[in-house]
Length: 168
Image (cartoon, rainbow, N blue to C red; front, top):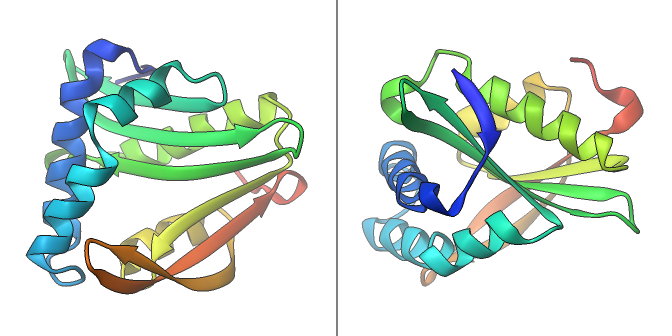
């Protein structure tokens, strides 16, 4: 497996992984309408392209045998020394292979190399697997706030990792 910077040629594959992840992860958490609206709103071709080319964003893909099997998306504010991990998704057919962990590790390390001192990550409160994923990396829950997806409101947990407290 290779982790590399995403290119605009990867947009369709990123959208595919996002869609399959939402379908697999959220049917017991989000309504079908919210899943569709969330994917449609957050993974447009224009938004993904902007994230790939924007200098304060990091979009990585995990590639295996010529196919994109996962991606991570983060932004950072160099002046504030903060970064936000927006997404780490792995195609459901490739879970349990360490791909998500490798993507998170590479994202974390690259953001720290950019001068980031504090990372944030957000996960829906009802997403037990997502919450456990960040906790396993040493992130600590620092807030819970409402978030709107589609026309519905959900609780979202914010996790924080300080550079000096990283354990991996």
